[in-house]
Each structure stands twice: as C-alpha cells, then as structure tokens.
Image 1 (cartoon, rainbow, N blue to C red):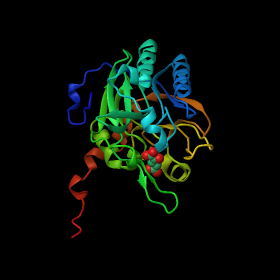
Image 2: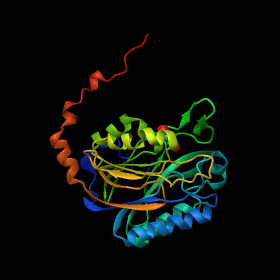
Image 3: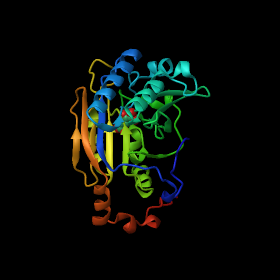
Length: 291
Ligand SMILES: O=C(O)CCC(=O)C(=O)O
C-alpha cells in the first residue's frame, strides 16, 4: 500500500506541511447515475477550493448508492485508465487546484475481488495513499440485517499518510467503531484522522457524533447527504471535531459543503494538558484469557 507509514518512525517524514488551513467536507447527494455523481463531486470540490480549502474530503461510496447491486457495476481498477474515471477526476482536480483530496471511498476491483477503498491525492495530482476498509459492516438485526462482506473483501493495512496538510490516518465508516485503530494513528503522530462514512438512521443517531468526538485529536467524518428514496437511508451530519471534542463545523442532513479552520497547535496543547500516551498502560489492556 503506497505511503503507509504505520510501522515507520516519525522522523523519516520530511514532507513540508502547513498546520493552519481550511478543510472542506463535501456532503453530496449520491444518485444511481455514476456520471451525475462524478459531476456533482467535481463541482463541489471546485467550489470548496474556490473558497480557499486546502484539504477536501468526499464521503464513503459516492459514485453509487450504498447497496450491493451497484458495486460491481461501478467498480474501478486503479491501474486501468479506461476504468478509473473517478480517480482520474480526483487527480485532475487536485493538480489543477493544488489541493489535497481524500477521495471518500468507491468500489475498487483487484484480482477479481472488490474493496471499499479510499484514495488520497496530493497537490501534484499523484496518488499518495490508498486505504481499503478494514472492518466490514456486517450486522444482524432481526428483519434488517446487512452484510457488507457479501460484496467486499476487507483491507488488511492501517493507513497513515504524510501530506502537505499534515499526517493523516484513514479509516472508512465502520472502522470508526474500533478505537484501537484511532489510538494507533494517534500514537504514530497523526494530526488528523479522516473517516469517509455512511452511517444509517439508527446507528447514526446513537453513535456517529460520539465516536467522532472521542478520539482526542482532530477527526473529520464525511457522509453522503440523506436520500430517503434509497433502500439505505443515510444519517448525514458530516463534521469536523477538534482534539478536545469541540465541533469546528458540521452539516445537518442536506447536501452541503462544510468548511472549517484547522490549527494543529491544538493537538499539541491537548497532549500537554492530557499526556495520555505516558499514562497509557498497554500491559493492562491485553485480552483476558477466557478459558
Ligand atoms: O458501524 C455502524 O454503525 C455503521 C457502519 C456503516 O454504516 C458502514 O460501515 O458503512
């Protein structure tokens, strides 16, 4: 996986970066037509760049609805130009506007398998990292079960990428329920954790904001907007939260671009106020032997 830094010491990364900038979350309406979605995403990214945002984020599954019947049809292959319209659009917008794009997620085909994958592009338009969702969303509610693993194969590598706008850890939607991943990113010096997501109406109401606010580092979550016509109704509420849990910007459930100011000095202050990495007791957290 490109630029995955999870196992390398911080001192190796010398990418010049800014620590105060505008971030934009593009909470777009996803339709059943891929071209419409591509146009909508490009327009929103360009509008956000015109407003001065340097780091732009798209939602989980923005080229097609979050529904099994669309994934194979809309899947792209990163190394085939004729089958990577979404990725080439993101690369072009990133280079023409000199911005960093965390490109939400789309279905990606590799070796006959399909992954739920997020690609990160730098201001030169080059692919800086790709993250495939690690924890697939399978849940078992009587009458309303959902098994993402029927369509997707899970990724197997955490992703931290050094960009012009900081060290970023990536997760996708259900990955946010696993605090261990966020703690790993924090321990590796992530300035910001980004989760493109698409929580539904029940888990969205209960947990979306709570999970976002509990990580003690900047966290951005970006969702499609709500469309009650689809089979899976999405919660929306894209948001950006600072390290002490305060909301920096948020959408409701409609289509919207959320723009907020980031200042990574707030992470440092939080670490000084609460030196949790020193207080952390790894030996106590090992799973108990249940036999
Ligand atoms: O974990 C949840 O409650 C929702 C997860 C989800 O919607 C997803 O992973 O797409």
